[in-house]
Image (cartoon, rainbow, N blue to C red; front, side, top):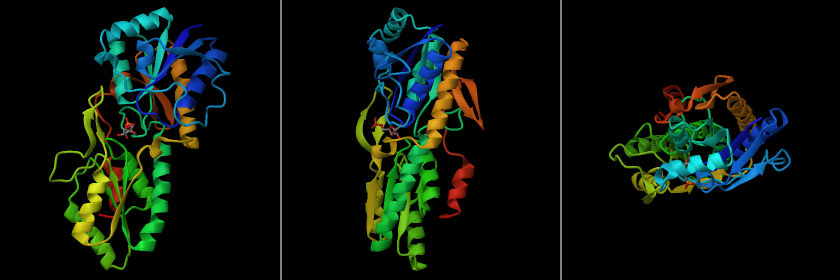
Length: 344
Ligand code: F6P
């Protein structure tokens, strides 16, 4: 029997509740542990804001988006006496191991705390799929499905009005969401951060399509995509968060203007924004998140601290948290080359 803490940090992501439910169900029913849920990511640990989680109060949450625990982008390493306060809070609750469910930032904190002797286990989540050491993160499949549905719907207006439709999707500095949803939605151009784009080349391709008799085009652009002539991403706000990230957004509208100016074709941009993170997780993400939750409580119960559960091929593995953070997992050349066959 142990006392296990759990927190969800960073951007909310479909599947977080499935992880919480799995950790509690196996932790309480199979191991006889007590599970404590910290509110709002690392902020809850710093301020010792928590609730006791039971199979009863985590029932009926599997299909719900967001996180019942709340989330934040709080960074204990940026807070006054942050590490000391984390330690004191975990000690007060007699937490044997803390399960941190998050992306690069939340797990980056977990990795640093692990180096300081705090008992942690990591679970990878992000719609961006940009974490190293795992093939996929949960949330990504749902985001791709939402974007694909949106692209399908945008085809209606594109076809009816002979327009170029630009669809801006999330993903931060990786083009996973753009590439997968662009392939699935049959996009005519996919612009990703990993491959700076030449606007003339994009417009030439659109002109070529229209001269060949096509009456519309769909361009999917990742929020972190950059034109070749510029090193700078387009930002929605200059201020950065406590992990040093600026808020991306706006490249879609820039492209709308550029494409219309260069080609003369009527162009419209749609920014999908947080719709990509909202609502119910797909079946795939519910299953992956559940498997991660079960593997995380097993890992914590084994006392195998400093590990993150990961998807490796069909299996769930344990990898050092440090392998997952630090280097962003950008898109594979193979997947982008597959996409390029349709617009290169
Ligand atoms: O990391 C997930 C993500 O949705 C990114 O794709 C996006 O850039 C960022 O979070 C947006 O963050 P926020 O919700 O804080 O605006």
